[in-house]
Amino acid sequence: MRHPLARFLLRRIAVAVLLGLGITLVTFVLTNLVPGDPVTANLGQRALGDPAIVAQFRAEHGLDKSLPVQYLTYLGGLVQGDLGMSQQSHRPVLDDLAEFVPSTIELAGGAILISLVAGVAFGVIAALRRDRLSDQVLRVLSLVGISVPTFWLALVAFYVFFFRLQITPGSGRIAPDMNAPPGVTGLYTLDAALAGQWDVFASAVGHLLTPALVLAAYTIGLLTRFTRSAVLEVLGQDYVRAARAKGLPGRVILFRYVLRSALVPIITVAGLAFGSLLSGTVLVESVFARPGIGQYAYKSATTLDLPAVMGVGLVVGCVYVLINLVVDILYGVIDPRVRLA
Image 1 (cartoon, rainbow, N blue to C red):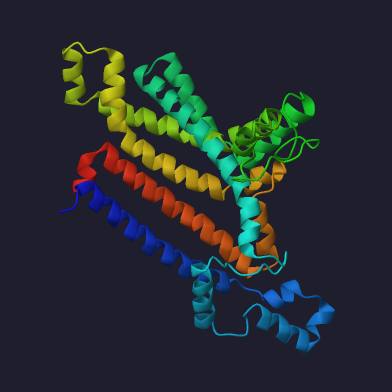
Image 2: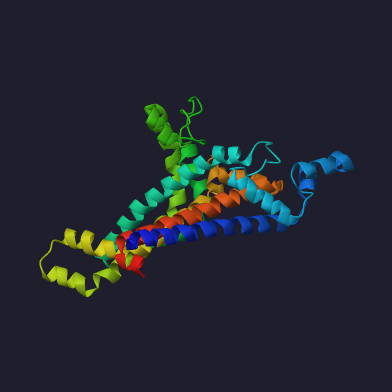
């Protein structure tokens, strides 16, 4: 008989695979339901008047086949790692995504890291100092973070800190007079550290910090309020009162009892927040001129580049599935009752 944790992992992985297959179908159907003709969007007026050119374009991109055949062809390509050819860049979609996705992952990863550290810390402080001045201030700040539009905050941050005060770097991922580090992961911060190029690393971190803080503002406010509620709920439990009655130090009670019990709902919010950050970076990337998947998706959608749109949808959907899988696994590690259910 397999270990309960092994059975739990196998079930979650099987569900993730099925969800991934479902994402391919939904992405394909929704993309092909978009009104408009890719031929019209990609060919000029003169080319549209030539039936031979139109027929060649449809045959080249498989648009002359029925939708079920196109979907099966698409699945066959996915198995071989082929996402099709972009109608705009005339390159494999996989190559385009490999170029743009790391920048977005770096930005979203930095934002969620800042959010977790700041949001959980602020939430715990607010809960431990309930109804005091610090609690009131943190609650107001969290409400502001949730309420302020990200695109407005990005514009204000860029104008104030770069244009007016000149205390933060400008647009892009590194300084214009620097060369990109050797491409290992595509993440400039990590690649520069692996190559020992610490000047490039400092430049990459400096260019990442402001957009990551802007992107993290909403998630920090959300995690602060959610962590406060979760910690307050745990603090009222009988086993926490019993631990206090035994004379255990406050630090032990906080980390061993309170935070461990409050982590399950916090992890849920953090996982969903990372997915939304990854898919919602287009505005921040536009303001700070960071080449990422958001900009790639926007340009692909405006030109009805269906293979590229499906590739972006597949990447974002798979990220959500992967995050949910990681969250489920963390559930089982933190709370054994979950994997036995």
